[in-house]
Image 1 (tube, rainbow, N blue to C red):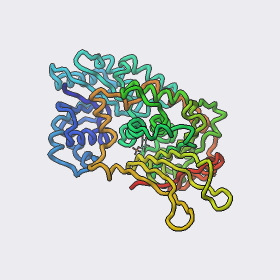
Image 2: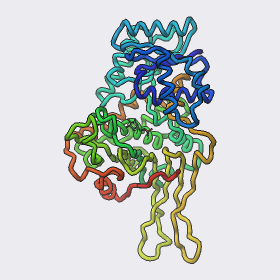
Image 3: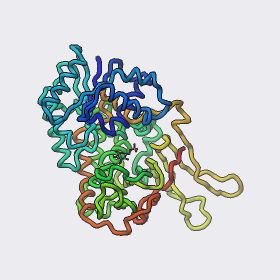
Image 4: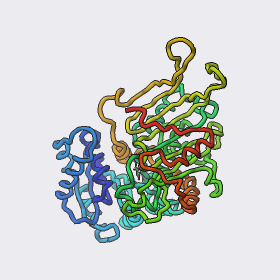
Length: 485
Ligand code: BG6
């Protein structure tokens, strides 16, 4: 069956930087289903030819991996179309509908509506699609992709879900979180559930705590307007960091199907100990990089956090008493996303000279980016006399193991939507539960001043208060720039 991907917000950044390069890469790799067409919709007046020309330029710049392949682009470009119009204008939306019907002819087609617009257009777009009967599935499946941010808190996320459900069934809705499209995030599921050796130690008996860090080196840049109202909690924690937590902590699903996987993920969120606003202060720490206030679009006395670290406790048999530390920030030492499984120390220290020496415990480091792979840290004897020990590692690196480039996160996700595979997309309850966990932190941080001690210099791992906070809990951050190159 042919596929039509309708992109709302066609002239925006997401379309030119991520979506179209991803589709082009799929086409180049021969993975895009035959008969896939892309139809862009936005207010900018443009013809098909003009949009294709502009996308050619941006795709050549943003498609990662191999050099730009003009022949592959030309083959793809002929299936790209553009329809100018306003989401809020019923006549223009009817024009889009007519154009889609004309392009598709009488044949049934799978249609994917991709909301790549600013979030305030999500609800009007859904209403317009509903009014025109465009979610109705008699001429083929109709699916809608909703980008983040999915609401700004629990109440707005619930309202958006309710509104979506007035037009689309839950099975037609794909809430995207691009972290789930990253190869090494999917590999966590493989690591845990395609092997037997990790399962026996993946619990409170052997694991002391878990650290999930998404560090970015870049500042807020041109996104000051959006970021200043969002802050790191809404921008990174409610979605990406909690997704990483869920795949790390979930139980094995009974089968690898969308709802079985998502059921297990939601169960993790349900087991996270709820915190009252009064308890939240001790369960997190935050910061703002020096220079943030001078970014365009940022309020002069903004208290928005550009760095945050929180501790969550999962009250179930596997994880009781094992804190999960989640941390993310802009302008940090380096770009790295890693999950550190920090194991307990041995019950007895046999090899210390004098009083018990503090030795680093075993760690499993799952690095998601910039390079992908896994490192296992363990002690070995240094050759020579005596029992001198050193921490060494075993390493698995994607780039050494597998040839060729790894797909960009949007590639598998777009393909999954076209094929109707929803495992890597968030369900309504998952998104709402995530907000329920993050909202108290947002409220608590918004209500208190940002003291000078929370300001950190660019190029650091957040403010010193973050180190003091985790030290007070008897632990230290794994502040290591990418362990895998
Ligand atoms: C986005 C956030 O969702 O994720 C950005 O809005 C952030 O602020 C980005 O920079 C990080 O994604 P990645 O894939 O570069 O880690």
